[in-house]
Amino acid sequence: MHVKTLCLGALCLGDATGYDIKKLFEAAFNHFHHASFGSIYPALKQLEKEGLVSCRVEPGSRHPTRNLYSATDEGRAEFAAALAGTEPNEDIRSEFLVLLFFAHLLPTDILEQKLDQVEQRYESQLAYLEMLRRESDTTAGIRLTIEIGIAASRAKLDTLRRHRDALLKQHRDIPASWTESDSCTA
Amino acid sequence: MHVKTLCLGALCLGDATGYDIKKLFEAAFNHFHHASFGSIYPALKQLEKEGLVSCRVEPGSRHPTRNLYSATDEGRAEFAAALAGTEPNEDIRSEFLVLLFFAHLLPTDILEQKLDQVEQRYESQLAYLEMLRRESDTTAGIRLTIEIGIAASRAKLDTLRRHRDALLKQHRDIPASWTESDSCTA
DNA sequence: GGACTCATGTAAGCTGTTACATGATTTC
DNA sequence: GAAATCATGTAACAGCTTACATGAGTCC
Image (cartoon, rainbow over all chains, first blue to last red; front, top):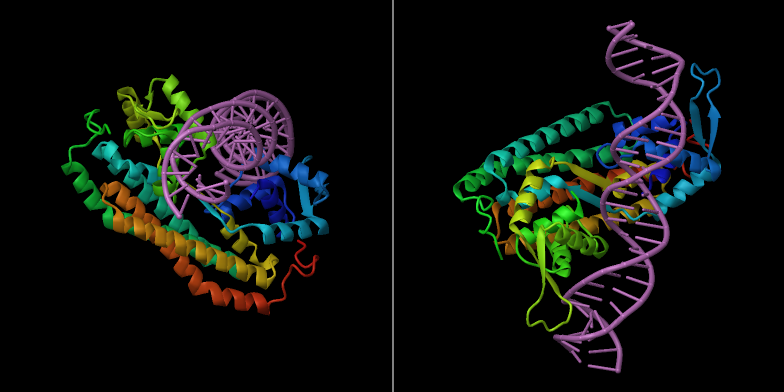
């Protein structure tokens, strides 16, 4: 789903500035999407040009430039249609799994260090999502979004921990193929 | 991680054509990375130009053009270094979770249909990974790659099933905000 | 003979990121 | 008064996908 559509969606939840939308992405979409300012601001401009959102400089603004956007009725209709038409896909790119896939080409200490990093990352993501769950006073859909994120992180973390020692032990025992450049020739 | 690096990695596992690499990606990387021909072929050309892989037209080929690539020693060293230097990140883009996030803007029947689609998708991914696990006679790292994929899919599927009915019930009960365009104005 | 798989390649175009440029406001 | 946060924007560039173009081999 394009950043443009996501911005329109964000504005269907309430008026916001580009900056607010970025914050929303970081706070709530964190574990399943993201976007940078460099795509958000142009997207909002584009949406305005298409009449899907309207923009007003905030009245009584403390700041000269603060563009507050609202979804128009047309915009809401458009977003509902876009939602209904999106395939519920998932696109995962995990450098971590690539690393594991090629683990036999890494020295043990580096592998161990990567595993530590990943565990920490999963832990902090888990902690963050659990915090969201505690606070969350929202729709059933959003709550499910959080539940699925927690379940997936937990499952990955548990699996990793369960296999970690065996992986490292075997890794140390088997002469690493990375030391001899001719040992993995086809 | 760039397709170029991934191709180099694939060639560290054994000689292959561009076509073979695509197959490998589909078979083994399926749940955590992917690449199209349009990026693989140019990547191989580039790697060859950099001396990281060598290419020979297959000897005694049944087919005039079949470019079999091999990683050179320099290529193997380069890949090992690239691996050691990659942060074990995960980049997830889930249209499905976006859909859930905005579930209140969808009519119940469409939501239900999306949930069905996702369940089926997770089921078939799970089936595929479990098949891989049964067959798999590979490195500990690759096996862990599969275990993590299974655990994550299973966790998401279970969570979805556990909350599905409650979500749909509540969705039907609460007057959907998508019917009245002014009902979610900020 | 038709369909499918094997096999390679290019070019246009889309999308988004990074990095830069700018400056006000708030908090300590 | 320094640092952090709020706030907007652009331009260059990267990287990948899609679609096209081509054709041999294999299976039914």
